[in-house]
Image 1 (cartoon, helix red, strand yellow):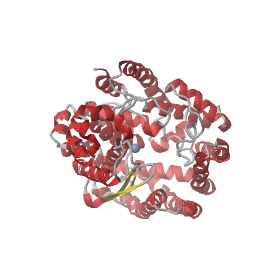
Image 2 (image 1 turned 90 degrees about the vertical axis):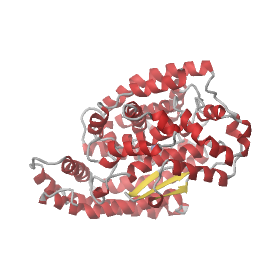
Image 3 (image 1 turned 180 degrees about the vertical axis):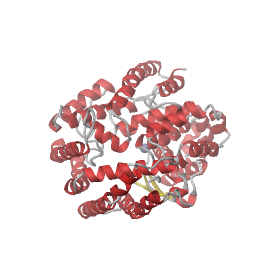
Image 4 (image 1 turned 30 degrees about the vertical axis):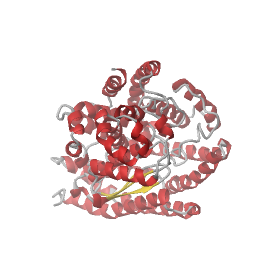
Length: 495
Ligand SMILES: [Zn+2]
């Protein structure tokens, strides 16, 4: 069934078929780059990405005329308005960014990440510095071409989180940071959630954790024939189509919770993509509405469900069966191990209480880089100072500090903030879903399909029909309120 009977919108949808196919191809190339691509192939891959982006630009620019005619349409359905909203965003972007800049924005990061990898291996920021300078310069140009109100960072943030501004993000952090500091201080002094646990050191067989992860995928109700799970250093999810989603996990041989929670996290992302309305396929609506919403899904499953007492109880027998070293550990021990609290240097290893400090640090630095208040050469020292201020630990070298994440090398400026917006939205979902479901009981009875169904109805099936703020107001009552997240953390860690 067509999403619209309006001839103008049908024409827009027709124009989107090749655009969808180009995204499909880039998505698959991206997945391959992160999983199986030979190391030396980054140059031709960068070239291919740039050429595909230019083709996409040509197709999208062609829709501009249609879209300006469509502006006069009235009496449209929510879906029709959504189609035009997303298509207009695409058209704006690709008409404002000149092809030469677009080509550089696509190509440079693919080569910069190779330099970043080498620099991190040698823990030498100076090797990455010229690349980062080039990327910051390109991102500033991008912001200028796109235009903005207020801070230039708004132009970049809007690419990942439509309509969100530094004012929104600053407001979230101004509440979150002092509250998290307060909770963290008490948790550390009480010692109930330990900074270290003997289970971290236990060695496991990869086969054993593969079986556990398989069981997790079953419990979460991941639809077997529409996804696959591979291995990568940094786990991620790529949506290729509504019936083709790729996730990855990692097996490091110790600290078995890492592979478990990355599997749950990426499954949370995957379900969002997999549970969209199938009628949206090949159209502008077959996308997640924002990265903040995307992250809310992964965090909701990982933390609010996965790290709960009820879920620990549910998975404990499977863990015990596969990990012989668990015979001396109770369910309560495993719960404490899942919820260790340790201020640490590395974002991806951070616990629920310290994670957002890592984000505010990067957000403040990149806002200043884009605003021209900070130079790239100052990054390592400012990073270390901020890390000490927020997390209370100081990196010993650049690999532990400013070189730890690939995002900036990848050109993802404006992206980090969405991690904390995602945690914020996850907190709001936790509050809202409990008005409809007895969440603890549902998890205890292994009826996770009920949660999956709730998220499908309220979030997933809608795809990009509504903007991130509209979707929050519609389904959660308001936008970006960190209070429920604080309340949840307080109840979990302080009572
Ligand atoms: Zn994620």
